[in-house]
Image (cartoon, rainbow over all chains, first blue to last red; front, top):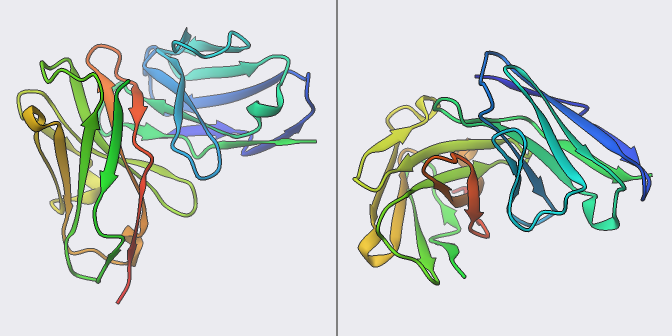
Length: 106
Length: 120
């Protein structure tokens, strides 16, 4: 299953809201996860099953979608949110990731 | 708090075998309920799931790696392993071990990653 993320990069300011989209090449129900990765670090799970917030993740991160189209919205951006975000499908092996969206400070 | 830690050689020669170990530490019970995965990330940031080891020893691999990859483990000793044969420069990457909880199917715990360079 191919995962297509957009945009590949995005600039925003602290306090803004941003939305990242992820499209699956076939129906994956809600088997979609979102990760945040900072430079030199491992990815960290934000959202699982399309919309469930991982424990400890701030509620400004929200996920939605089902089937083939999904979104990750970050409201009221904080300085620590500037990072790269990846979607990943867990519907069927081989699990696959999107190519990432780099969120930069404007 | 549980942690994962990758270890192994940082430099492997072309055509040789890449071998890494992932050690689980902290408050961990090897009673099952988890899948143990290897994921790699090339310099271009693409994440590639390589395969997983289940509690009963069952394995699933990414077909893109063909028959070069093997994941084994001894979870009673809190360790699992990655073997990748016949490596080339294209296998140069950061290799992560990661845990997925059965039923959630998301990678909720990752190691810090191990950079492996394939070069003569």
